[in-house]
Each structure stands twice: as C-alpha cells, then as structure tokens.
Image (cartoon, rainbow, N blue to C red; front, side, top):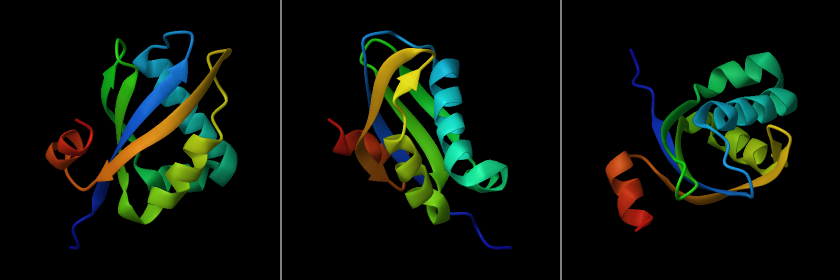
Length: 104
C-alpha cells in the first residue's frame, strides 16, 4: 500500500471578527465544496491542525495531490460567518516542524 503524502499550510486570517475554529474550517470546506463539489472536497482530506485565535493563524493539512485545489479554494474565501475575511497563505511544508521553522 502506498503512503499518502501530506502537506501542511500555514495561514493568516485577515478579519475584524474573531471566528472560532469550527467557523473557520466550515468556511474552508464550503469554499472547496463550492469550487470542486462534494467529490472534489472529499479527495482533499482537509484537517485543521492548529488554530490560534489571538494571532489569527491556522495550520491546515491536505493531500499533496490536492494542494493546488485547496490553495485555489482559500483564495475564494471572502467572508466567515457573515463577516468580511480573507485568508493568506504564509508557507507550505511537508512536516509541521519545518512549517514552524519557516514561519518564525
């Protein structure tokens, strides 16, 4: 069986409001579903690894094969729970340790 390669994305949330982790991941899932449908969204294996409300940072995990799909979907997010918002990609890495080193 072949091992699934994953990528970790460091994100910066630009919003006046402070959405919860659930509201944030729901917005990401909604964006992916809107662009690629249910089947495309299921291929991404998205997971919220870390969410820092104070710094407005998040870490997402996705499959390497669907990385570009997730990146395109993040660019389409304009609101989170009826508040204007934007999500900016800070770094991408194959491990969480290397991701934290890149974002220092």
